[in-house]
Length: 509
Image 1: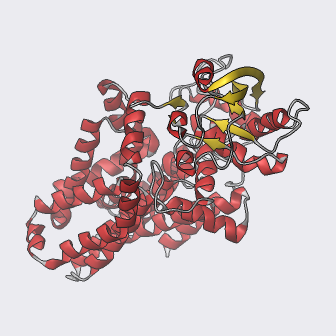
Image 2: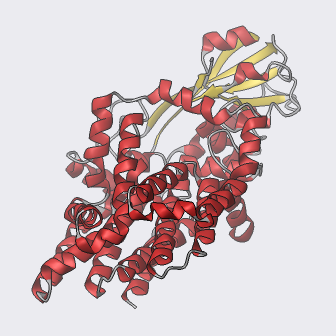
Image 3: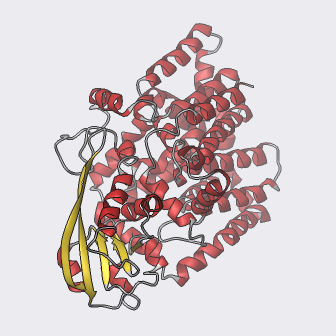
């Protein structure tokens, strides 16, 4: 019963707050993808686009609507984590502690507030772990069919499921469960997952593997030095998972790798180590490991429960301290405060978040958590572009194309553009590249951003006509030039590759 009560609490926490602030940049992009349903997109599988399309079809475009499924995924994650605790032999205290670790994690608080692939990733990893646990504990090998299905859904959600699946297989190989590889069950599960992701593989193949091209551009754009990557993997998870839960998930690792009771499930411990090693070598970001922590919370909570035993005061104190300390972190993870208040209290979190000089005009240099910065100011871009589009200079707008070089600008103008009576954009950024230049000739183009010198190689005449400038409630400042481009020198239809852009820059292999 305690599991379901806490799951409901998690759900209500998001229902009461997921209508705050504005649309996050990736939410706008996923909604755009949802308007072009396909088996794949440049850098992501199709599931998130399907969910965006489905939620909008059912409930409309409100923030609450598009954030409904992530909130439900968060509640289900609490349930599945609690069930793992119960199946491992944990009592009510262990179930409560593991579930609260999920609820109070700053990372999970945020990702279950917005529409993102990351909101479903921990649920699918943890559900996969639960099914494997049940299969081995109750000797039900046919459950591997369900494992294959869940892995397939995970692959359709995010390609990182490959790493988790691989780590589990390595973990099984390093334990007596390696004998399972001589039976049909695991291989059938792998086949099921492969068949489910096969249409997406075909899509990637037919489009010349844009995912790998995108990753190459990402490495050029934001590849971190090894030392910084080490800090990400070692230190950031402590903050993301709530610092006071550190003993819990460390105890969880010990449970799987060293505890006699965890011997049957030692492969989960090996799985964590394999994942950590993979992401360390690849220079992965801190949140890459986030989906595996519920599995560690489950076993760690059991270790804590056994340590406190019948000491009721200790149990109460642990829960109280965890809840009380989380009160100070929740406002920086959940959009629960008015924006002016958020700006004020963010000064007290300088030891946790990077809070650069507010006078900077860089979008990444303001006094507020970056994840909230990405939820603000997007309608201003569409409003400013509409002024240029509807200006008297453009008397005939039948062939005026709005071109962007950034997927965020493109998605924002697309979504808010209907309010300002401006057409859908064309862009070479991310999935927009494959949606093409529509039917525009390119003779008259409004370019939102872009490199002035590069635009001059594409058009006979390029003139800066406006600049998008705005400063919202928490200090975001931006200066995005708007160019009026005339007389295209390349064919928009046949030389569309000249407009391909990743991370705001033209991509050249």
